[in-house]
Length: 97
Image (cartoon, rainbow, N blue to C red; front, side, top):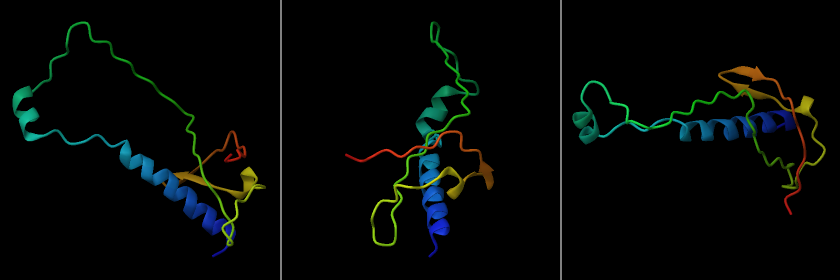
């Protein structure tokens, strides 16, 4: 397996797994029956909506011998979301002390 393919596979895996954790769980039958057609908003409850365009992706990249690759450059990796390449705005190496 060549290095770019391994890196792309690693990043795809790292991006896909957290997205499943972001999926809302389906409400149970007991909850849907009690709420009725329209859920009511509790008085005094604050609503916070946040939109972000920056996502942090941590990755551990190793060579074929299992040693960490420390000299990767942003142009050597690709990040995809919904089969579209994403722009890498910040890229750094952090030691795992």
